[in-house]
Image 1 (tube, rainbow, N blue to C red):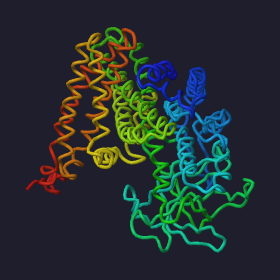
Image 2 (cartoon, helix red, strand yellow; image 1 turned 45 degrees about the vertical axis):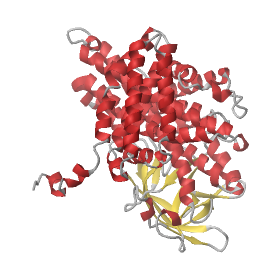
Image 3 (cartoon, helix red, strand yellow; image 1 turned 180 degrees about the horizontal axis):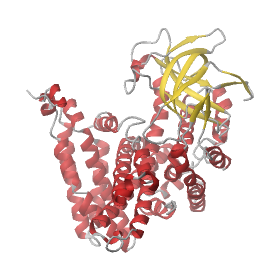
Image 4 (cartoon, one colour; image 1 turned 60 degrees about the horizontal axis):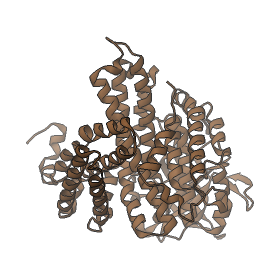
Length: 564
């Protein structure tokens, strides 16, 4: 079955679960009327299903390739990207002053989820470009904004993020790329970067690299790093492209999945660059781009989960083994719990983006703190759900799921990168229990209070479900205080399961809200989640509170099978 964009389900969550209407009531987003929202979701869903989805399999079978130093993209990618760009979708949430539409980020997240489901490898191009737009809007000089933002918003140019080096992955401060000041006020960038998504492109006219490098007087670690705009082709003041810059693609990585996305090893050889922000403060600007991307990656996980589940459900309805296997109890369990998990993960992503929109529109520190708190949960949980559902999709296909011709395995291979890039899910979890709970858990407590209040409100209509959600929130509140009392090493050792527990309780909360507003199937889906998925949070909390001592005590040699 061809992918069908879940516009109706997204609209239901926005209207009934996450209070997105509050965003449209602000002055900044007054144009986000019900009519506009419906039009954006409908047309974005159409492009995802009719333009992007047909490209997905071809990109896997005919990957991007490098021929004599020239990047050749997968068949049809150029036309697909052009269709997206010409519709103005890249600048959906960008500043109208530079050609964007100025709509809420929530709509951008919803559209990006559907585009990811259609063709993740191609969607990565626009995702990185949107992240670069966000960074430039917040940190670049007026001259750089005026030159680059209109071209990026239009899709004429694309953007990348150059952080990682062979010796500097998550430890960005270990980078060795260097920058030197030139007499004309520009800089010369030298160094090698790896894992650069869409580091070159033949679907856009120019590729604009944001590159982290260290000036000679830059201090050690991340505090001494600066950020530079380094374009593939040097533009004049009017945006006309001139000579090629001193940079090149060394090679393309051979990857488990997302074969249509060219992941490049980049070499900068005295390339001309322009400072973004201030010297030695590049990480602040880059983190703007990374935080934008983290939420979007969570939505990518949800998108792949949706596409994988749709294919698995269609196969199960057609596959006859003593009757259609969709009626077999275990297959039905996998399908139902996958649908429930997708709903919860999607709601968390849209709740996070709604908070960020309200923070931007109102200037409220409380909304900003909520959005910041939910970001690592949305990224980690969304991508974990993507992996679980894609894995279940292979299992539902049985042996045919292990055969590449069905396409089920591609979803699992493609989605597997999402828990890794833009900060691994372990880093997201440590961010949650570290920086995001440096307020002594104040934001977490506010969220838990809301979950408890909602459970009380649901007592009359759905007492059994409401009681389970209420008890889970109370248990999580107690565990929160115990985690806050831990030493940071112990807290980090249990960070991943703690994030998972919090996400499961949040998911139950959103399911309960959906049950109160929806029909019979929505109530049944909430029951499936609350009775079958939510209980796992107790095991997560047990691990979260176990500390680090036993992990530290086990000798290193034991990991290789040599026990003392």
